[in-house]
Amino acid sequence: MSTDKRFSHESLQDAKTIKTLLTALPKGVAKGEISLGDEDDLLLMQTAERMRLQGERLDGRCTVSLRVSWADPETPQTSTTGRPRI
Image (cartoon, rainbow, N blue to C red; front, side):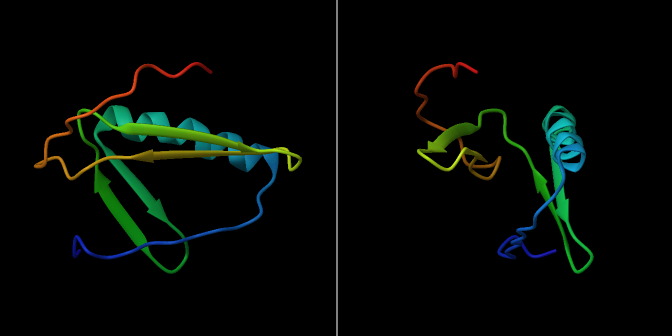
């Protein structure tokens, strides 16, 4: 698969499905590979040793957005902003 391929997915899910997805994410990080897919496509991403974590809550919407990003493992990360509190 090309490293420049983009995968995008958005859907409305029930709480049980969200819990399943949130449980699968740390397993993929621990394994060193995260796979994202739907019925049309699949994207496999190798995780890096260090990853950036961003969290955001939008006032008045009861929304929490969690975003994890990292550079390709061959490109070293150079900055960090500390440990998150959850």
